[in-house]
Image 1 (cartoon, rainbow, N blue to C red):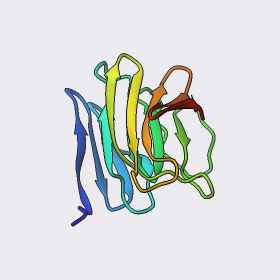
Image 2: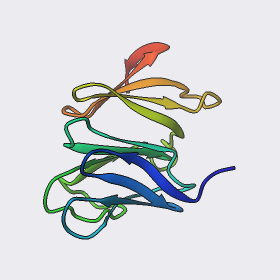
Image 3: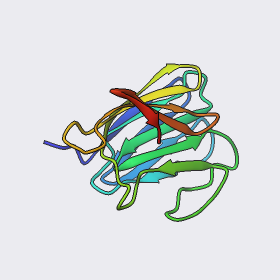
Length: 139
């Protein structure tokens, strides 16, 4: 059974939670802020070990930088506050989990039944995604 609300990730100063499809960030000061919105609810999230960013996955991926001005997430908006990928057809990926490998390197798992199934690595600094299992070219 899929949860419709709850905590996805927690660090010393931040908590990422969701209420249905909306992803929320609790921070040390200031109001709660929306950092993502996922068709079908988010599947997982992580907060960087140094609290520089948070990543939420489900139908695609949203990378949200934990810095002022903490702009609330909006669909189809370009900003320096967040980056997103693989969230709309025909390039929609169903991501099941995400974890930080080291520093600014993150790995995530795409649905094993999908044509693009596998484990991918995201470099948070360059925003490049490379398939690592099974090994292939950059996407």
